[in-house]
Length: 141
Image (tube, rainbow, N blue to C red; front, side, top):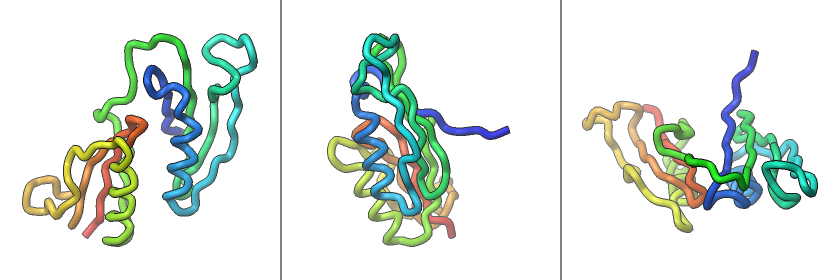
């Protein structure tokens, strides 16, 4: 058995999945787009420019992606986020800046929160990127 995080781009984010995974694989080491399958003309759920399903890796961890132009009553939420343990101060700083830029938003500024009950590590920050995906970045002690 395996489990994989599956990201579905709908609503305002529909049509941005390929751009998003190209961005993610460009900023994380050891990352790649493994496959992208697009909808066929006339196929339910999408149009030929949309991703029916795709697989990509971020630092060797596999993720799946899809997008649908159906009217869904949901989209991405910060209640589910991608948690990243970084290896250095420079890595956490660069990733946080790139992920929170270009229309993203900072939910918890990158700082030292060890004394304020977050307790994950010596530096932590939480942001949402321009595609609506929530990221928690941590630098363990």
